[in-house]
Image (tube, rainbow, N blue to C red):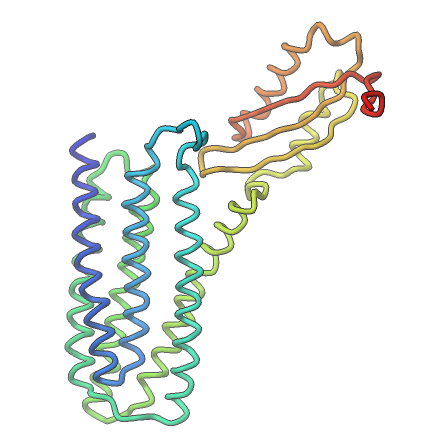
Length: 297
């Protein structure tokens, strides 16, 4: 297992370095050759670098123990970086769409040769990185839990295809001087990238806002608790998640005074029902019916 994690980190690190080199060269040559498609590809490659770094962070951080201050440990690190990452990417892509539309309306000459060469290099490096990660992914017996690596792998794959598109555009420019094909490709790729990024932004936003996890319904949880005859009323029910594996619930339940002796058993029973639907950190506050909040003051 240790070897595996080390190997995985090594594969991720190599992919990060290769992709960073692509991003830099694509931006430089995109500006030199005047190609929007190259720059959009660079932005998407940058997203890869970020998602690879994210997978790396997750591999390192998620195993850190909780501290006195960070009582939950660093479980949210993954979600936080996913949110910032996708927010940044969407901003960059909107800027690219605006500049591509501008270029589409008045096409400018583009150096096709540079576009072809840089696009080809990007295509090769992306395919190589995807192969590296895919290889480690398939040869890892624990791969069912490694969604980060899988996401990075699929990302690189979609990226190779975009780079291929850039190359084809470059060939059309070189042979037939069809300059408008470049901004057009840039816009198509941008829309595709937005379509990919939006769900990540939405999902991480809701987790950071402490929303009820998508696969759990508040109404059905309420029903599960109310099914117990001892429970007279429930309020202040909250369900939220810290990571895909850690789902928390807090609730106040009212019971009759005479049921107070069986309270531990009741709580255990409720907890068992809730665990069945994937809630694994449960806090239940019990109140008796003839206890009235107003009496305190």
